[in-house]
Length: 315
Ligand code: NDP
Image (cartoon, rainbow, N blue to C red; front, side):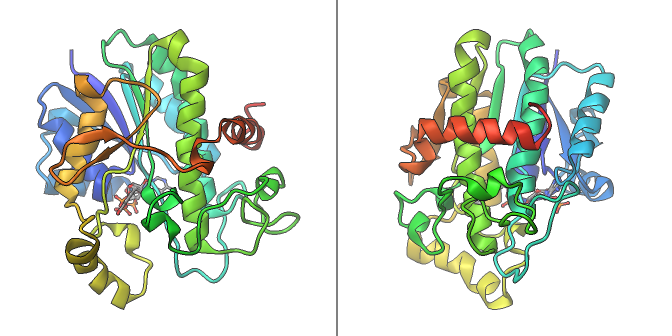
């Protein structure tokens, strides 16, 4: 049978390039889990994904109700789930004020972390039931949340502190909208959300890898300076960022190449090890990368897991 991969945020950038790379494998069906149905359909057509290799299903990660509906719809489709890729993200580097999800969580952490946390927790049962030899749960990370790297040290740095804002619900009223309890900073909120993504992957691995055989992984695909992620940045930044990454930091990677990298983490037998944060070197070969101190703090991962369970209504 075809193997079935759910990719969130497959309507642009890395998610779309990954859907394309997976479809090219021939035996893969991609469920494009997207908030904008029409955009996703058009995107799939524009990159030439054959009709039999994809289905678009509605998912708005900024609403926990929508996440639950997506899971119901997916189950009703009767398809087994073999791989889940949590890829979608919002980034608001120039926002002066926070915005919020349907449940009132600050938007970046609410979408990138909490929406995916609920989705992954609910779909874990479906992954367990898959009879396919490859069963994986992948959460896209980023170097920007990684303070042991040069890029991760550009201020504002990620820092979850003692998680007091998260405990308070990130609502900007009775609690700070930021995980560490500080003033709102859109760029930092994104980086914090990426640290949450990497901590969540490790806690999944610790709790479920042995019992289920599922491979849990995260990755930094390289700097894909051309994606929609930077859409809210100032125009000058958007103009200079791609050449800066290409010629100065040399961290630049094309959307196509990044999509191939993520597709490797989805299905390549040599990337089967669980609990790994994958990166690629200059000649595009993958290696197990080190996470920063905070992004590999097991105690923080456990706390984050418990608080997140409460916020999304699982505990
Ligand atoms: P894009 O902005 O191109 O893609 C983000 C995707 O997420 C879009 O499909 C977008 O949908 C979707 N999305 C946003 N909000 C929601 C929501 N509420 N519900 C459902 N989907 C949503 O960015 P990238 O492709 O660059 O980012 C993809 C991943 O790669 C992210 O996890 C990002 O952190 C990571 N990453 C990116 C890097 C880069 O350099 N670009 C580097 C390292 C990691 P829509 O099309 O409707 O807007």
